[in-house]
Length: 262
Image (tube, rainbow, N blue to C red):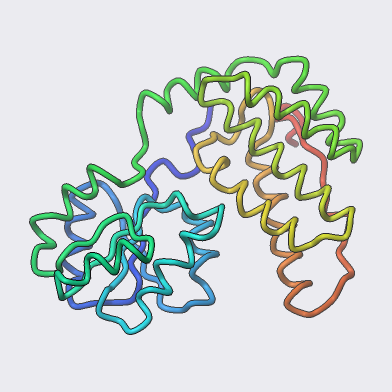
């Protein structure tokens, strides 16, 4: 079975503060890479796509509060740990009020960032990933097969109830598969009902559940479903940006099984 799509998510740093090289070294020592975001317009999309382990915000920039509150009020990004690193320790209270999970003084970065990574970063759990791979190797239960049949018939509301029941009953990590399918189906339901913004929001929420899944799980071609959902999301965004309402419904592809790959 193929490995998860993103076994070691990166950390994201807003801007390029003087301490960025030190942060990169500390993150690298913790087994993470570092990505920079400079523009507001790319911020949320990057968070959703990268599924980062941690976000570092430069507390010395004038709009640092915007970079903190924006992801924390969104369902699809609010769980991402976020740390403000600032020049003034007195900024700590304001950072926490804005929604940051922690504040670090830039002067204490070397001493305190490793501990923050260990305590807060969303790092892969090897035991959970091993259990997920084991569960993904098992067959899809009958309600899931029925849910896929309903999905592929365009009965997106009906598939929701079937996969929701599976997700609620399943204590293991394979529940991420059920939730990912469920949310893509709900997004497609919104599209058929003329609610592209609701669909876009749901597709962005589904990304967090796809992040840990291998390319094949319980027979489902997860890699293809992930790509199909991304194509729909991009088309929706382009349509909304252009002020159009002519979504191409042929992009609502069915769920495929891995043994159907050519």
